[in-house]
Amino acid sequence: MTALDAPPRLAPYTWALQVEADAAYPTGTDLDEPDTSGRLILLHDPAGQDAWEGTFRLVCFVQARLEREQLGDEMFPEVSWSWLTEALEGSRAEYVALGGTVTQTSSVRFGDIAGPARDDDVEIRASWTPVGDASGPDLSRHADAFCQLVAVAAGLPPVGTVPLGRRTV
Image 1 (cartoon, rainbow, N blue to C red):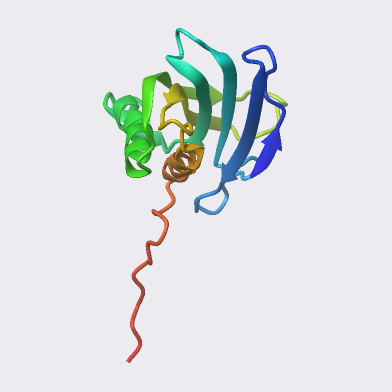
Image 2 (image 1 turned 90 degrees about the vertical axis):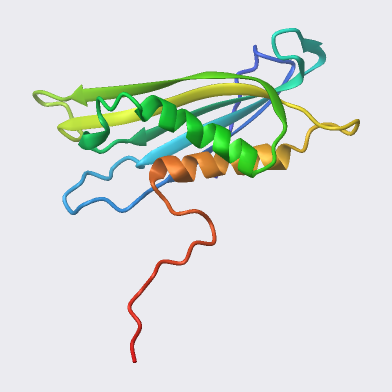
């Protein structure tokens, strides 16, 4: 996890972090870049903003490698979006005004451009307003949901999952 400079023009107070995750890929896969990366930005405007429906706003961007079989799957954007909504619900993060996009991209390199010959990715861009009681929203729940989203996008098992192994007798 790395702290980042947040965009200063979006709100009087900002804070951001970046996370990266790598999943197991077949031998020969170019791993110069992480399999999955994400940024979470916290915006705060004490005066509030009508579109936010509150004084805080969270903005996230997650980019993950896709397997070729996932390209063109008509249900994949809905499944990808459910990763976010299920992470928020699983973390019991209260929110309003959730919106965003899911984009599948495929890039093929030609000539002397460095990097893998082909990149297939999914990008999830979303923002929502965290809500809470009189003391404010519990932002730790939202940060947890964001980390869960990145882990699921990377294809990692849920925290606490123990892989089944061979028993030796």
